[in-house]
Image (tube, rainbow, N blue to C red; front, side, top):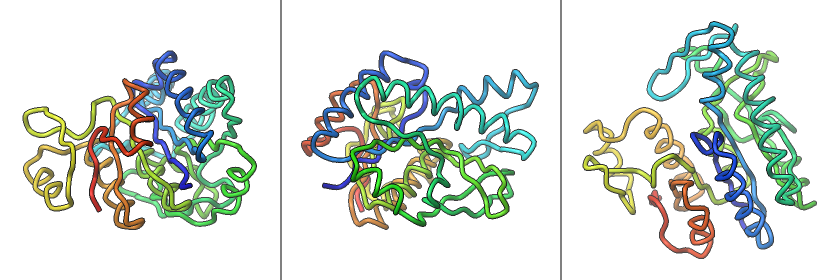
Length: 254
């Protein structure tokens, strides 16, 4: 069975009850197929940067990450948030293993210098990941990578999840704070083709962080020749419905 690669972020990471409920669903899914978790943590990063008197800036939905901010960003994502994710997953019996994107050379990176110390992740070596999955562990990836010169890199979590999914040829589900991708009237779009997506981007309907999600979904759909789902996290049972091929959120068609 294909591993399920689940990207978590947004307000979900601030709502422990919701997170626990979703991880309980992951534990049930794991009885049938492997699960890989990839998380961001933008709100936590904002809070930590503010404590250190750093400014926060985003361009096209992605965080500008100057090198001098990276110890704080990495401390939040690869430290505090990852540890919290592992602790909550452990309580659900998921046998979690906390990792960053460079563990076992899982991903390699080019640097988006426009955004500072921001990595563009590409799948590299699945050996460690396959060993962990074969032994029944649940990898929990932060969105931090290490560059070719040993420098810490911040990676957009949606794009990180896409790279990990391509690495294991899995099924990608991008969870978000809204039910899926919305049209200009804020109504859910059940299915979205490449052509329709391009129209909505050109019209400014899809922008910012949701465009980054869309880019990650389209890239992965093309690479794996499979549909990708963008869905809300508010109803954990939606994830189980998705595993039964029931329509949930927005399905990005390849």
